[in-house]
Each structure stands twice: as C-alpha cells, then as structure tokens.
Image 1: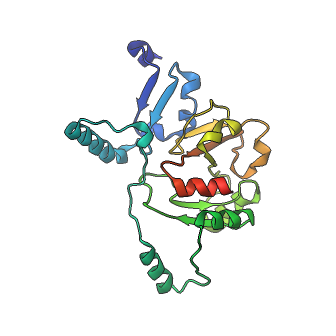
Image 2: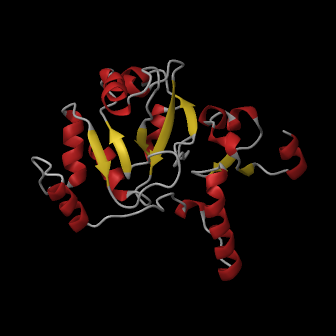
Image 3: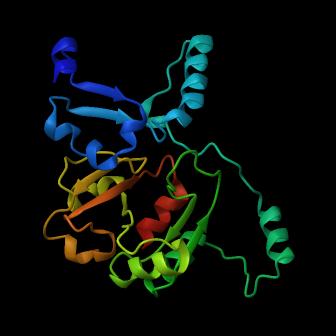
Length: 228
C-alpha cells in the first residue's frame, strides 16, 4: 500500500527470496492496489546472475528485454543424436522415434501413464516448466499418490501443479482473461465448477499453483497440453 501511494503506479516488479512463496504471490492483486505484478522465475539469490546479464544487455545495446519474451530455459540442451546414444548406452527397452512427440505423449497421459517430458534447454530455477517435467492426467485423483510414492518419494500431502493453455486460464481459475503465470509462481483459486474435473491438482483449500503455457515461448509443450 505504501509503495503504491508513493509511486502512483499500478504495475510493480518484485524480487527477493520471499517471492518464492507462490501462495502469497497469488494474493498480491487482491490485497494491494497493484493491478499487475511481475515476478521472475528465480526471484531468490539464484536470479541475480540473470538480472546482471539482462542489465548489461540493456546498458550495451540500449534495448530493454520485453516481458513477453522472457522465459527461463537457460540450461543445457541435448541433440537427438546424444539422446539416441544415451538410449543405447543404458539399453532402454522399447525405445522408438515418434513422428509427433506431443501427440504421442498426450495419448499416453489419457491412458493413465506417467510421462517424463524432456525437450529443449533445461529450466533455470526451482520449477520444472515443460522442458524437464513429470506429467500425469490431472483428472485421475490417484495420480497424486502414485507420483509421490513411485517417483518423487515425498510426503503424500504435497500437491502438484496444473499446466494450462494461457488463453484458457480464466476458464478454470478466478482471474481475468489474459492473466499470465508463466513461471508457476502463483497460487490461484479454482472456479468452483472446475475443481472436480481435475482432482489431482487441486489443493485442499480449492487452489492450485498454476502455470500458463504460451505457444510462443514453449511451442512443443503447448502442443502437448492442447492435444491432451
């Protein structure tokens, strides 16, 4: 409130380790006068390196990095040939090349299978956002316990995050159309009529730590979610 009164602005950029708290982040627009807030994929100390690079880029080129072009896929990338050699090295059974990975993965999800989705550059930061992700059908309530027990090896109460096409977010969550959560950095409340459709990703209080998937920054993952 004080910051808003001093600046008179309705848009704010926020950083610092406390903004790793996605439940708090989801309440900013409800509890403050700020209509729009931007929080990076790594607001904690690890993001200092990205911020330093962005600042230097602006200083040397005179060009600012537009928010719509921001992503967090800064990690390592592996070629198809490197993947093929890894499959051979570990003698993975039933490995095959598919024409459309997004379509094949979405079919596996519909059949109740778990999918290890590996593509492009790895995410920088604490959250998997569609390049190194474990995927499951959110309509199946048992998926939460299955992943916690067989993959994550963690407490059963820990929830999972719903990924949704950016243009559909307001259909499922109580937010305005066009609201973006690209880094899974906010918890939003599900619309009452949608909760029972995706029980595996609904928190006990009716919320979800959502990720909006944009076709421009993540086209293959977007295709998978769309096909599913």
